[in-house]
Image (cartoon, rainbow, N blue to C red):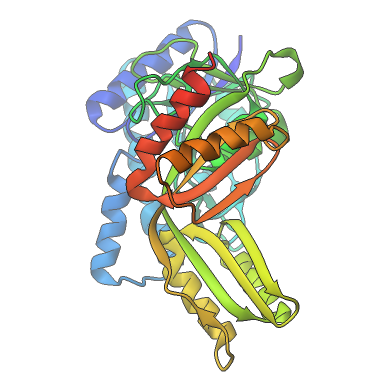
Amino acid sequence: MALLVQKFGGTSVGSTERIERVAELIIRTIQAGHKVVAVVSAMAGETNRLLGLAQQIDPKAASRELDVLAATGEQVTIALLAMALIKRGYPAVSLLADQICIHTDNKFGKARITAVDNQRLLQELEQGHIVVAAGFQGRDFEGNVTTLGRGGSDTSAVALAAALKADECQIYTDVDGVYTIDPRICADAKRLSLMPCSHMLELASVGAKVLHSRSVEYAALHRVPLRVLSTFKPDAGTLITYEDDVMVLPTISGIASQTGVTLLRLQQLSATQLQQVMQCLAELNIETDMLQQDGEWPQQLTLSFSLATADLSQVTDAVQKITENSLVSLHHPQQNLAKLSVVGVGIKSDPILLAKIFSILHDMNVQIWLMSNSESRFSVLIAAELLEKVARALHQALVTTEN
C-alpha cells in the first residue's frame, strides 16, 4: 500500500463532468490498495473571474483582500469533489488550508509555505477517509488568508507530500508529461519518461508551464518523488528524478518560453541606489531575471533587468520613490518581449553549442535585448511576436536533428 498525493489542476476540474471523472480516477487508485490525498485547484477560469470582480470594485484593491477573494475558488472545488466521492460510497473529507494548518509568510499573492502540520491529515487517513485538500492557499502567522501565486496548487501538493512522507506526488494536468518543447508550439515535441530535477527546475523557472517552479524547488529540498501525468490520458507520464548520474542525459533537455516580459533599464544610479532598488524588489517579492549592470562604479551605473509585465506598475512606483530628487533616469520600459531558454547539460562550457544558437538567431535577424548563461541554461530576451518561430527553429536544430 502506498500513500499518494494527487494534484488536479483547474482544467482537470473545469466542470462538474470533469470533477466526476477525477473522482473515478481517485477511486481506481483506492481500489488498487493505496491511500490518497487529493489537492485541487479552482475550476479553470474561476480565479480570473474572481479577480475580475475585484477590478470592477477597485483596480488597486488591497492585496490582503484579493487573497481572501481568490482563495474561495478552491473551496468550491474541494466540496464538489468530496461530494462526488461520497456519492460513490467512498468516505471523503474536504479541508481548507487553515484546517490542515498550512503556514506561510505574509507576502499576499505570492506567499511561500513555511511549514505544514500533518496531524489532521494523518488522523483523517487513519479513519479511512480520502482527504480532498485546497491548493493555492495558506495562513500567515496572524491567521490571514494567503495565496501562493499562479500555479501554487503544485506547491501545495508537494508540501503535503513532504509533510506526510508520501510515496509519490502525482501532478495531474492536461498534458501527459514533460516535453522537450510545448507541443502547441512544435509538432516535433518529444515526451520524456525521465527528467532530472535540476533540469526540471530550470525549465519551470523559465516558463515551462507543466510544473510551477516553487513546487520543483520544494520537491528538490525535501526529495519528494514527483510525477507528471494527464488526467485525460493516464499512463506513466514523466518521473522527475534526483539521480542525474544514473541517466544517460541528452545534451538538450528542453526549450521553454515565457511571454508577458518587460525590460526595465535604470541609468545614472549610484551603488547605494542600486542596492536600495534590489532591496525594494526583495521586499515586494518581485522575481527578476537576466540582471545586467554596467557603467562607471560607483556613481554612473546602469541596471537592466527583465520582470513580469504584471509587476511593472508596482516596481516603477517603488523605484521612482527611491530615485526621486536624483539624476536617475528610468527608460521607457520595453514591453511585448518574451524569454526563450535552452536547458541542457554543460551549456555554458560548450562554445560550439552557443555558436550554433547565435548563428540561428543571426540568420533569422532576431534582435537580442538581454541574455543570460549558466551551466545548464542559456536565455535570450526577444520580441514576443518572434517567439514561436524562433523556438521551433531552435528545437529543430538542437533537439530533433540531434536525436
